[in-house]
Image 1 (tube, rainbow, N blue to C red):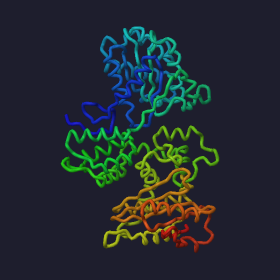
Image 2 (cartoon, one colour):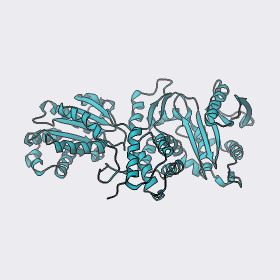
Image 3 (cartoon, rainbow, N blue to C red):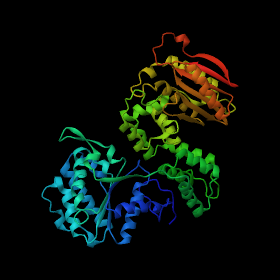
Image 4 (cartoon, rainbow, N blue to C red):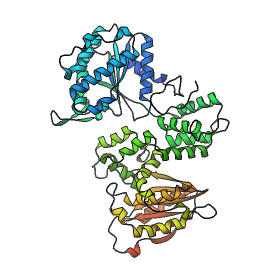
Length: 517
């Protein structure tokens, strides 16, 4: 069977190109041998399940333990129905055992004789472990799919049985989810208060975070395709894909599949170039596959929007100390942000493109602009017409800024991005740079072999001085001779004659046009 890049579900060595997970076994093996109860967490689609399922096979092959992987995601729909969730978890373990373990290790009927189902998980595991000839090692995936009192119930039952291991409770236990258990704040309807996850499961010995692919792992994965088909990737293309994905496993595999096996796949007798990878990235963004759609859906959550808006406009996400640490941690656990050299930033350039596009998608479709209006007969973009028409458009439709219900601080930025994206979709790209604390958003339009640089800033004290200096540095980096500084005012307009005012400057040899909106 020919292998391919996998983008859905756990990877199977016989079917998929895979990063070698065996180097991670030793750390897990030590925790199991020491009878530890521990956490494995990472954002979605980063390889948690693949790693654990391969490790379970490894453990069972040793013949020292009975290892079982169980997924309890379906418990999410039951919410606070404690007894039903207990029953569901028991059923999930029963089915997993029937599928993956020898019949001699299946739980007997006696294991299901449970007096009180609100303690069902602990009772079932106790009876089953007493039957088994070897210690049980249990891996519970999607633990954070459980909610409220149901989650508290299961966690406390694991804690309750911990002292009876390994004779009458799992020898070792791993809970797998998006977040570290210490970061859970679980609302209990029964006690009308929040319970911190760490207190409900204070037997946790260690938390393991599954990291994104390293450059070496990424190269190894793509070289598997070259070895299997003979198709080469230019070094520049490899470096570009890794830079754009930052090794995020789903993105790496999704781009590999798009380049090599998708409807627009490059024939295997052709070398894959940076141009090919750019086109594949654009298709991936526009198609909004499930993983990307799930991330985009999170943007409407208030705690996500609060931090993300600060990044879009370049302000410190916590200047007033109003952003709880747990909110910042939540975005990290989702895989949306990371701590960069200058502060919080979007996790990778592809997500950096998706976020503003998602926030402006509806607006783009309702702008009434035909991209062809702004393209010259030579195929080049008439950037001056784009700017002039935007100033006119803003004067006519400024209510689009004031009427925005979410991301109000970034409303000016998002309206201008909607405008540009609608036009540039006709044959170019917009590259964005933004992060908390930068005080700006930088844009570079690439169209028909030309590049145009913009810097967006909110109007404040010393904005012109700062903006000129920052844009000059950006132009030097891009090796461009000129650019535009757009300064947005969030106050009520009192003099429409000043809206769209333009000033020209020369700064360190660079030509800068400042536009006040």
